[in-house]
Length: 386
Ligand code: PLP
Image 1 (tube, rainbow, N blue to C red):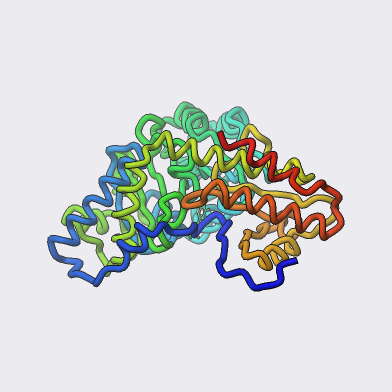
Image 2 (cartoon, helix red, strand yellow):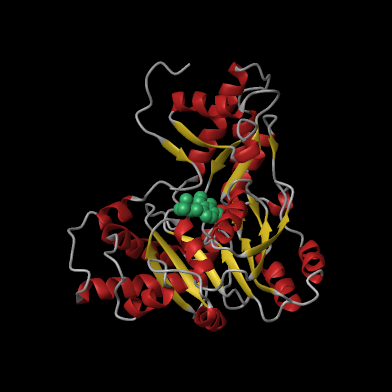
């Protein structure tokens, strides 16, 4: 149907998200000395802003890397080879944390939850209760599992974990969840929280932030896993001077500096509500045109939705055909490749882009033989915009 090539790419993937002009402009800055006072002030303000977003007074260190570097940082700074650790695994990023830990010789026990479901706090309690000797030193979990579009109830899981294993740490990968959904680092007693720049902060990929509670710092002192680049105490030494250990990705830091201003101007509740509406536009719009969604409403992610196309339409075909209209969607990962496609709706994504995505899918599914009255999905999607 499209008789010309699209002029732009509509980035409907769960990170990197589109970047607002304000952030792009802030990044369009000459390099400055990263051991000088101007950079120190900027980095200090970025870290203060991260503390606001994390809702914490804990230390936060910034690493030049993607989110996975932050996940590795969390492991190598708290554990030693042979330590027993427990992993709540609801999807591919749960698998990733397990792989990282095994690489370093951590003794892993995992609760592998059916893909598309969140971890039931009762199931976690039951699994942890099997560890009679209370040997688990750490309990790892994702806030938002990007591969399945599922959000965990971190508050409840953390409560269960601390109650069962009061001496253990709770570590949370909040890379795709932070600012899309509430995460109270201090109030929920989260010892280590990892995030990345390219998600709800609306900044390009390039930095991961890792928070450490006082208890996590105690674990650091006894942790013997090898580390150099990821040594968080070394990073803190530099953070205290308003610096990073290595040469920082300055453009990303300038972008984060502006992003912090933007999210603080918008306000946390407004940001959460915006993501909730994004989720509802996609879920209700797509349900109206015959799609099945992988996650139930009760654990549906405000950041990303995993979708089974109607009938026997292949998920990868949906992605390649949607490029004709300029839409870039995300693939299914692991066993779900081809079965589903995913739509990211976090960060700098606006309601009408989501409505248009539903509209384009409606056209495409019709072309591919699914009989749905044109306008049905768009109408359902629009109804979510109050
Ligand atoms: N954790 C989650 C939940 C993610 O969604 C991602 C990336 O999408 C990562 C970790 C890894 O981040 P990165 O790809 O930046 O290394």
